Each structure stands twice: as structure tokens, then as C-alpha cells.
Length: 310
Length: 223
Length: 91
Image 1: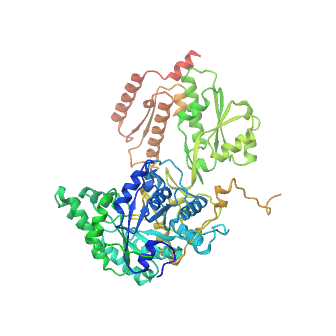
Image 2 (image 1 turned 60 degrees about the horizontal axis):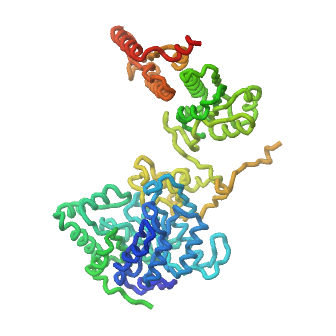
């Protein structure tokens, strides 16, 4: 695959390197310093930074504004967009807005249901779904046209991504679903956090069999556990999360003061094992409110230094 | 059918507490089936209001009850033509359509809603009604195995399921079936999983409420 | 039930067959639900919901019937006369 956009992330993976992304959740306030501090922790150790879009349906500074801050810091943002809060007019408008700041990556999501957030009485939009949003960005970029058909002057140049959960039910359609996302226009995929490596390998194998890993960069998602409690919570409370018993046991069997370190060990081991897996093009490290540990994970996993591309 | 749920009596009392002559107007259609606004419920509400007034020491209050075949048709609503204006208020326990049509027809009479109109649904079992249709105006059930993602998926995804589907249940509520799990099971049962592979086009919502108040006009039956 | 209370009855007691033994299968269960509905309705208009009661009884169990009747009587005496009756008498 050769790069079609100015996206650094795309160029790195197109050159055959493993891409590395992490994420930055915007603050629940308007202080730009919070964003800058978080982003600085990631400088030099990742190729691009995802900026979440009101994740878990809790109001935060907008993803677009935060992406602009990152851009002005000389970093590469991935604009996350959920279809929960905006209709096709607002989505396309924000895509243009992002493009006007030369933001070159977008991740198309449906978003958590608002009942999980701080405004459960709100309306949800879902004018488009995540696949249709990916399709929309591709149409805007490749045809230079809005959904309505009119021409776009200076169309967006965006590397289009989507999320995939290899562990959600029903398992039998997880790969056909990936195929649909790619057909819709997704060029890279960031997966749900991987703890059940066997199941993930099975998913990748099926995707390879269908030729999907040739059409799309799959970035494996990882999240380090901070504690045994977090492992249990993820296993039992987070929908669509697959944490095998032995992983929870490994965390629980570790003395409390060593659990954070053990969580990092598991994360690094996961990356090391998946690095060798054919069809994995990179890693998406979601260190939830633990950004400062990302450089260590990247280094220990042997992913430094990050490649330079033109 | 249109499924409605009873409003709390306290709320209805709040509407009519200063009235002296009230008509409780039931409807024999959907709201009778969902036990929210039929003849029985009209009788109970009227009786409760009478006792409320009596208990407040209001001696001259009059609460009558009447149940029409339908409140969404001119001909049945005409049945109260001669009496409607005698009342300070009509409490319609029909769906929102009935309440509005009654109000339109009897322009000078106050009409209050006595139920909350909820959705288009089915009786799954006695006392349990669940949503099946959002009347989006462009039915796609042919492609989704007869199960509607617009009304049954919490995010109305056309290309579902989302990552929150777990053991066949929706992420927002463990008791709620994941619509896309149902669709996939059903497509499998009718040997049409090929339909799942097809990317669903972006929906034209102009036939939904987004397009403004809708109408169906049929010249082939209009006189 | 409501009619009787509206007309001034101090209490209404519905007696059904033992649960599971209804000749109409679920008639007695539905009756219980109705009584509970009426209780809630009475409470919400400021009357005592306890004025409506549901009992289940086998047709041959006269002593139990007598006990329920006494229980109901005691309950109603405790609540005092139905306010509807006072209003009627005053009028």
C-alpha cells in the first residue's frame, strides 16, 4: 500500500514500519495547559495522537479544538469523530474545519450511548453510522464532493480510520464486519484493547484469509492495567471487553505495590508477541490517564526510535 | 399498535383541580389493548376524580365518562358534538393523536392528555409492550431479516452491531436484546447472511420526522 | 371496587380462590393486580389504599373466611369511616 495523503501515520505504515499511536482525552474544562502537558508526555514516542470525542458521553473540550492545539505544538493528531452528537451537516463541516488546519487523520466511530455519560437525558443523532461516516470522508477526499453532491474547494486530505472490536459478539461476523468497514473506506483500524491474544490471532488469521490485511493497516490496541482492580473492572464491567481469567489472576497474584509494574509487563509482552504477527501494522496504546507511562512502554517494546518520513 | 402508558393521577388532578365539569374520554382502539385509555380506565379515572373532588369538599364537581370507538376519526368524535362545550375540560386518555384531534375539533374546549404516548409496539406478554417501529417512512425490513435497527438498536445503526454487543445483549441494558444480534440470527435462519455483507447506504431521513410533519395523500382513494 | 367506595363503602374486600386453583386459570391473579391498582389510586387521591383488600381462600374454609372478615373489620375500624360517606351525609 502506498500513502495517499500527507498523513505522517500513513506514510510510516506505508513504508513498512510499525505505526504507534496513543491517545489524549481532552479536559473537562477549557484550560489548554492540560492538553499541552499530556501531549508533551507523548512527544517523540508516538507517530500520532488520537483525540477522543466526548468519550463515554461525558462533555469535554471538543476533539477538533484539542487537535488544533496538538497541531500547533507540531504534533500529529488523529481526530476522533462520533456520530452520536452531530448530523451529516455538522460532521462534514467539522471535517472541513479540521482540514483547514491540515489535520490529516480521522477516526470514525459511533460513540458510546449517551446513557453512560453525564447527560443521559440528551437526544442522540446517529444520522450516519461509523461506516457511513468513513464513506463520507472518503467521498469528500477522493471525489472532492459533499454527500449532497456539490463540489468541495480544497477537499480534505485525510487518512481514514475506524475502530474494530475483535472480541465483541457475535464473533462469526467480526471479520465480515471488518470487511464492511474497509469497503466503506477505512484505511486503518485501531482495535479494542487486546488481552485475549489467542482470540485476536484467530481474528487476524481470518482477516488475512480474506485479504483484508492487504487493504488496511491494523493497529493492535493495548491498555496497561494499573491494578488488579482495574483488570477485574475491565473484565466484568466494560461491554465488549475480553480479559481472560489467567490475566486477571496474574494481576491479582502480584503484590499490590508491584501491580502497576506487572500491568506494564503484560502490555509490553503483548506488543512483543503481536509485533511478529503477520497482518499487524502498528499499535494503539491507550494508557487511560496514565500517559506518562507510554514512553516506557514504547521503549521496552522495542519501538523506539520512531521512524522519520518525508 | 400505538402504545401508551397511564399518567400519574396526581398529574391529571393538577390539570383539572380548578375545573367543575370534566369529561374523561376513552378510546376503544390501541389504548384499550394496552390498558391505558379504554373504557375500564376511563371508569377508574372518572371515579378517582369524583372521589378526589368529594374529598376536597368540592360538592358541585361533575365528572362524566365516555369512550369513543376512535378519537382519530371525525365520525366518532362527532358523537360528543352536543355535549363537548358543556365541560370545563376534557381529559382524553387516547394517544397523542386522539388528544390533538379532539382539541382541533372542539376548538373552545380545553383538552388535557391523560396518558403518555410511548411508541409503536406489540404486546409481548400481558403488561409488557415493546417497541417495533419508529415510522421512519421508508421500510428497510426486507434487508434486515424483518428486524428493525431504527427502532430496536439504541444507536439506530444501519451497519451494526457496535462493539458493545455482548452475549446478544445491548450495552445500554443487559435485558435489552442487541438488534443486530437478532438480525444476524434471523438472516442465518433464513439463509440470507449475504445481506449482512452489503454495506447499507446512508439513509434518507426526509421521510422521518426530520422532514417536518408528514402526510400520506392517496388520490386513488380520495373522493 | 371504586364504585362501592365512591358510594360510601368503608372498605372493599375481594376474595378469590387459592392462587393456582382459579377455574379461569389466572382470574384471581388478575384480581389481585386490580386491587393493587385501586390501592395505589386511592393513596394518590388522599384516601387510604388499605380500604381495598384481596384475600385468597378455599371455598370450604369457613373459619379462615371468618378470620379474614374479622381482620378486615378491624382494619376498617382502625381507618374510620370512608370520607365519601361523611360528604354524602353532610350534603
